[in-house]
Length: 375
Figure 1 (cartoon, helix red, strand yellow):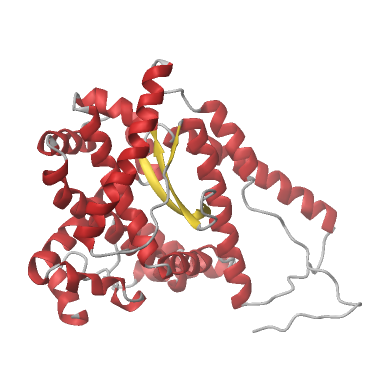
Figure 2: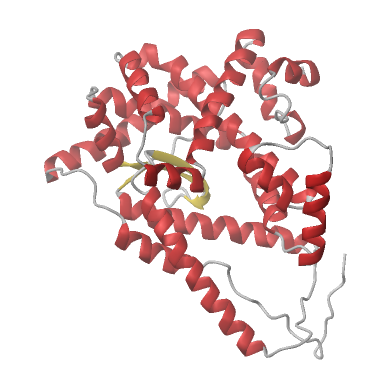
């Protein structure tokens, strides 16, 4: 660890500012986000009230099936529109990247002096770069605002409790999907809440998951000391090597990132796969007893996930990783189904003990390996 210079004569480190201006991102995203399906004021109020009630009603059966979060408080969900989701997502990203930056600073206290150049010019360039990043991020948030049904955000403070973590339900998107699938609205709303409430239970019962995400994000986003020449040399050597690599986007990430960054990226991918698959497992375990039309909803929703899309939509989904997200649901649910069938939910919950008990890449598709190693 480098020891920073201290005292009156020490030069203050120059803060280049955020890589993305999230205020700009939120403003652009809100302007570009579409309003959603038409609803009367009465219908809108009814939808908001039912979603809030469904999120509270989902908590008990989710806790019963998972065996997690027993005795913890049940905070209210935030039911929001697309513009509000954009603002919430931008704030979450600001908090998440800020926490990751703070964690990275704790690892290596480097005063970061600028050996040459004008500090004012550097600060101006950083500001312009952050605003340009904000424009790009805003467009992405606008696109996503029409696709997200709900999410649990562990990085944003819940205004009702003051604790980290808030459950968001995007009302217009839920209404749009239930209308397209022609399903019973009350059943679909509860079904969506079962999935999202499971995420809240996961993080509420296991607070270390948030810190684990922050630590890996800090590694993933840390500015390395590798020069362009060194990066190119490492990529060329990796291409020529006989060492096996992942295919597709994962293989590209493996080439471009340092070994430490790729390990952090893999850790986050495995965690996401587990969280999504576990939530889908719980949704299906709870559904038959609480959602009368669950079979129709599941069939329609799965068909919607895999339906053909126009070329532009396909490109956008690939760029932002939505197809990888679908793979997480499928792989994670298969893993959870297998382990729970083999050993029961109580022993499955050993998985939430610590980072070492989370599934490894070679175990997510072969769950018996995880059982042998951990249990």
